[in-house]
Amino acid sequence: MVKQSYWRRTLQSALAEELAIVVPSEFERVFRAHHGLVFRTAYRITGNAADAEDVSQVVFLRLFRRAAGADVLENEESYLRRAAINAALDVMRSRQSDRTVELPDLPAEPAHDDPRELRQALGRAMA
Image (cartoon, rainbow, N blue to C red; front, top):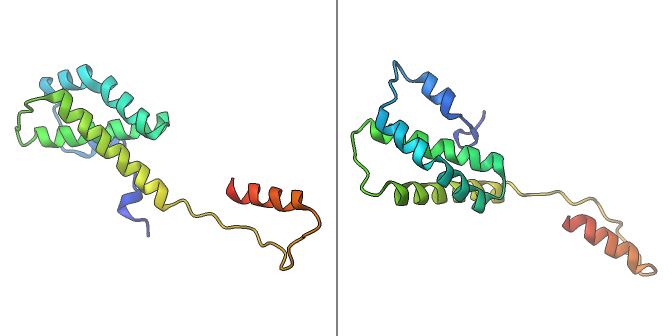
């Protein structure tokens, strides 16, 4: 069974699932004005364009769902920047928790004769 935290949904697929969605012009204005800011903020944290795109989709999907409640944002730029930072940090945290690497079995008796072999094994293990 796949955990919900590992599900990745794009903004388009999530919107397609909603019933009879009409994108408000205000939402579209906010998206057009700030999508670059959200992407750049996420990219600075994740260092990866694909992850930054995922973060952007999550941020704007959350904003879209929040807009359904008719809340008005006082400062759009600050809200979106903070939302991008939080979502990007969530991505980074999930990556760190999944960073377990199995080390290859090393010989029971370490080779004391050749320190280069030990350095190479340590280098491979750290990579």
